[in-house]
Amino acid sequence: MDVFEAMSTCRAMRYLESDPVDDELIERVITAATWAPSPGNSQGRDFVVVTDPDKKRIIGEAVDAVMGDRVAAMDRPDRTHRLMLDGTAHLIETLKSCPVLIFVCGKAIYPYGAPRDSFVWSAIYPAAQNLIIAARSLGLGTVFTTFQGVAEPVIRDTLDIPDDVHIGCMIPMGWPARNFGPLTREPYENVVHRDGWQGDLRA
Ligand SMILES: Cc1cc2nc3c(=O)[nH]c(=O)nc-3n(C[C@H](O)[C@H](O)[C@H](O)COP(=O)(O)O)c2cc1C
Image 1 (tube, rainbow, N blue to C red):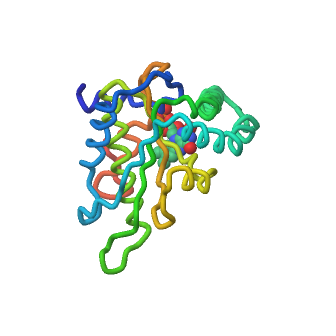
Image 2 (image 1 turned 135 degrees about the vertical axis):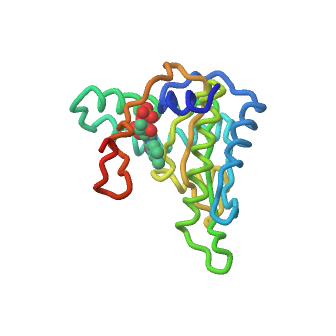
Image 3 (image 1 turned 90 degrees about the vertical axis):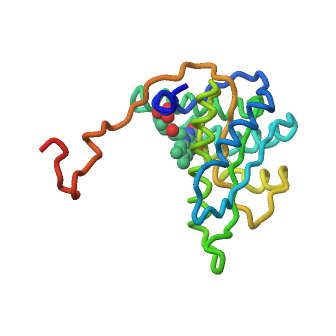
């Protein structure tokens, strides 16, 4: 699939089938993630791939315990909010049966003499985005989440993630149970400023 098609149809996929995903495909998407740039090519990110049913259950239940009621209670003022929050509620309920959970993690290793946490995120997010686009091109659904934040002690304990490793995001991945499709995004002309902030692109 053309990369532009993959990017322009790469919706957050919160409905995933429980069918397993072959290790070969997991390896392909994570290899694509390793191709992402990082500050000074420091590559200070790693990937924890979870397919073990018990570990997924523990993590899914821990996230659900905090987020389940919270998401259920959130306002759904319009269709967009309703679809997103219903999808989020479904994702949380089904995390335990999602075939693969991928945690993109990073350690402060850059700049080498005086490492800073801000550079950790600079390594994590390009890698996570590469992963998501690669998965989409293979027909796999993913969604960026920061759910790990609400259950971090349980996740660290379950996956033996050391304290000096930041957990940047948790990406559930599986075969999509809904359609990929066009995205709702601001168009080019609304976000580009030609030759300065006030510049009108169409002038
Ligand atoms: C850094 C980041 C964190 C996100 N965290 C969550 C999350 O915790 N839960 C969730 O359901 N979606 C999460 N999302 C997905 C966004 O809500 C989604 O990409 C956005 O609403 C656009 O939706 P679309 O891709 O379907 O058009 C996150 C996205 C990003 C980039």
